[in-house]
Length: 316
Image (cartoon, rainbow, N blue to C red; front, top):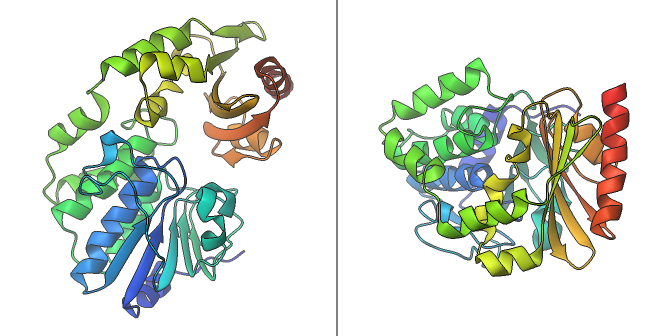
């Protein structure tokens, strides 16, 4: 399906008096950074802007939301979905997402479900698109620049993931030039670790299993581990990359228990297989090197199903 242009989307946004910006559930730095950066720009233009999310904001990202944990309220005006690959990714706000006037996203699997859509799968993060959109809207403030930098840096693993491109670095340089304290921001995002996170990492690493001649690694995070460690959603965001760092591993799957016999999978690959395509077969999706899906059943059943799919993909 054809994209609208960013100029068309900017013109639509500029014509609105009230807007509701929607983040995906279990919000990460990209969806929140995109939303709060855009909120700042639109408020400069005199707009009334509300940001909504089905799940709480983790402590790591509350500097974006002015300290707010819960992004709740009654939708108002035009609905804008940011970094939401499918309506289901909005969680309990799915029906609101289905009414979206505007969608801005970077996932190749996005079905373009809004009235106006801009999807660029070449962008490493939604924040890259938001920076380009900002040039059609309002002058970039340090606050908006910090939000968009957070979006880009977190979705690229501080520029370490394979989705990082020349354009990613150029975007980061432009945002740094807008006056953000990049050293302080990076320290907060990537070098500050709570004791709970270290404890959760320790327990999770004890569950690592290898398959396909050590090319596939799996790891489990149970509800009991979360309770014992005291870890929350903030600690869960970075843990998925741990098994992917093991030498020789081509694909790493972290299974996070949501409820008894319910698991969310975070899949990371080195590009040897397309993680998004594999997860799509299980009702999920994502990028080549970072994707996700959900499973119902026991952990061993879920692990066996995904490992079988990954092994076939590696053999091909």
